[in-house]
Length: 488
Image 1 (cartoon, rainbow, N blue to C red):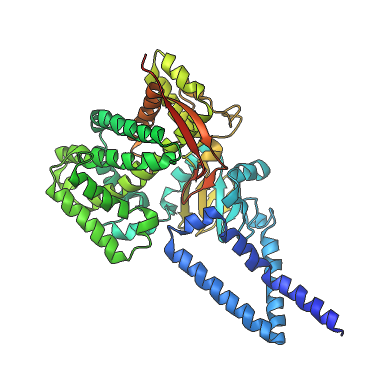
Image 2 (cartoon, rainbow, N blue to C red; image 1 turned 180 degrees about the horizontal axis):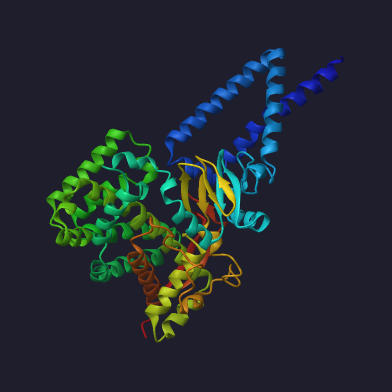
């Protein structure tokens, strides 16, 4: 055999060996997946260890021809097996949904329309790989609700690492019976009366954020909004006076629990941060949601499990998710500024502002519900094996043209009358639903009204949407120009 033949043979074997590793590396190199792994340090470290080990095996094999050829044979068999699983019909005889189980697919991390496109190709229920984990996806709200209701006992919410720091566990990840008791306490706490009473402070803080943004158009809207949302949320949850030393100290503690920071902190530091926050709450006069809870159930208001749950709900929902919503509102109104003019002329500005918020939630921020099967389940003549993820694709359901004509268009008039129950689920579609809908709507409505009252808005910079740790979000290059209006 000639040297050329040997060289070509080695090159071919190298392609076979490196095909899957390179595909994994390309997917792992996407910005969205990197951000996701930032809040799952154990998975990130496991992937890094596997990559280092695999690279070592390849290097060693490259030094010894017999080992190199054996590795090429194993890699070829792995490629054949992976190609077999990647067929849409794979598992049809066992009742699996249609769709590809190709490992490390790239599109879910780079294409916001991936799940909708897959539903158009395979139907409302299909399968795919969430990196390497098999996942069944549902792009139909009525089917999604029925699946979650019927199989509630066989489903778990995959927990974030924060769960280990919450006495008795974070409420979102609890089984049905404990969840029922704990969520009842939290629903009592999240009183509408507290939200209504806090509206003047929320609006004042959002006015300050908009004023900062108007003074410096080079700043990202999220950077101006996030600190004010945190101030407003600590006031609504626990009664802290925004700008006070006590509020500033508590906000710093809450910020340390932000997922991208907290999940890489040593556990003892996270526990110390949680303990410091509880000590400060015990030393402060009660206010906000905590005072509302204490008025009804004093034991619950002293329960560390309830208090730590409130801390994490403040951090992840009232701060992170609300800031995301307000950033999207700013973007949509910068692209459709005529809605601010309509708002100024509207005889019912609050109702129109709420419609603008709900249309923003239809298009952005409300994206998915994820569960994991404890046991194999049957649904719609299909089988979802034990250990699979199940994703109800809310964002893609909200973009179904048969439900919302011209689904990509920003049309708040859709919500002049409530959509049907099978059309819209911005705040959840199961027993584990968002209990802070009224609060989120207050923030959104307040921002829209303050923008309409005080500013004309124009987009000053933008780029493609980006996948964050949990949601698609506006580009980091997104900027707006706010021009103060002369009061009428």
